[in-house]
Length: 188
Ligand SMILES: Cc1cc2nc3c(=O)[nH]c(=O)nc-3n(C[C@H](O)[C@H](O)[C@H](O)COP(=O)(O)O)c2cc1C
Image (cartoon, rainbow, N blue to C red; front, side, top):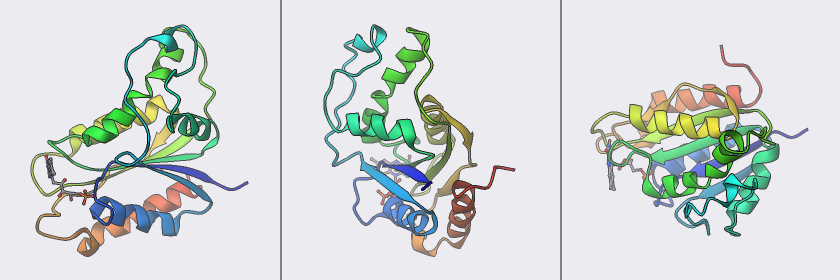
């Protein structure tokens, strides 16, 4: 069985730092990928209509419906984002708001989620100000909403204003180890 990995890209820059890290990871992880670019995908934010509190579905029929289907079967999730104001980017949080369907299913409908257990990795890049902790905490929380049982320690290049991510050797080594984790080895 092929490993299936969902990658959620929160950067607006096509060939930016986040994209560089994603490309590096994709070269090392086996199997099939679905990459969602939150700036270009046709995915609207949650409008809090509250239908999902009555039925485990989302009324917004956009590309998120394909993501919900992929989430049922995928093995890995990668959240990759630049840090904006010490957080994930707004577009990534727009995407994340659609995970409210899973929250409702669990806490209002008291139903089990029909999602395979997953492993998760968080890739962050930042110019060099503030802390990456808040963004990592948010990403970890989102991973748990999507039934991620094992989350890899944060991988972050947090000095991109001075050192281009391509020259950050430590982060590339971290990516290599994260790929081993996603390819099957359990988190030690
Ligand atoms: C609106 C905005 C807010 C930002 N806020 C932060 C921040 O809080 N901390 C930080 O280290 N870098 C911050 N940055 C810098 C980006 O995170 C950084 O340039 C990153 O490498 C861009 O990644 P990308 O090329 O993948 O889009 C900010 C950039 C923008 C445009």
